[in-house]
Length: 334
Image 1 (cartoon, helix red, strand yellow):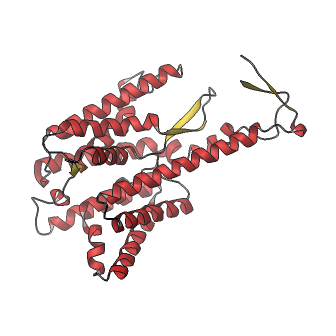
Image 2: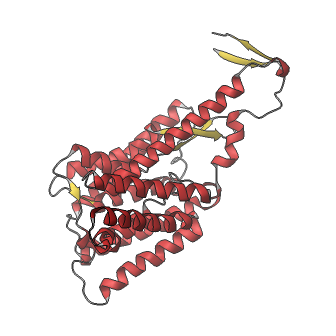
Image 3: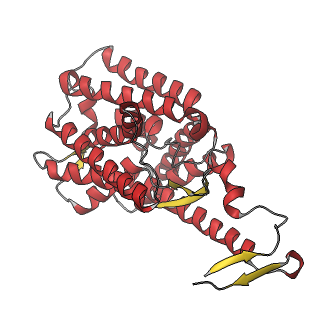
């Protein structure tokens, strides 16, 4: 089945009309800089964490996570390139390979750092592979390239999705204890380390991602839902807000929920996105569901992806609807 147009339509095709918005400023101008800074920061944190801070996982854990993430990303890109008859993005030079593997590097280290599976490193490998595979399974077309091939973008946060699925499927796997980030420190160092993460995260999100409105809204919305639950249950608000003081919450706030590829770019949409994540977290807490941060973000990103897909299908349907005034003829071809 194909569509033949007898004359040029007075409006753009849905693919062409979505190319410019989809390739937002971060993707078109700042993606590489943001990824390289993030990759460097999370690498340094993992090295310091295992060497000095007190990470509970073994040194083997991040290595297994990286191997699984790299391998899955390379296989996914190879298959996708062959199916679409294009060159693989990692081909051509070692520099291209390094640039291509930056997202896998970040996701692999994030999964290995945030999950605790004791000696079950196979679960860590599963989480890292699931994270990278989600980029090729859960995605939508957001435009077309110069060769008129569709441009796809994933809508689920890879690291968060890999962690979510692993927590659901492996009952013996949990989240790494928050104290591991400062287990071997004391005194003023306990204040300096979170301050460094806040400052570097703020700089990254100001210069590279533009997600400061999302961060500010998320912090305020989290505090609001904590206050609401405190009033309903008659418990001290300090207890409800306690997660905000943890190192893991800071990392989630500055380095996970702000993922530019899976969060909106418009300020109003960022505000709505952050409020939705906080609302679902509060609901999960009321239902006594643990690991609510990761589940809430997965639910919201999945909902956002579904909405984007439905919206695109609606636009496509409107564009392909025959109208006599446009002189559109539909023909069947085999």
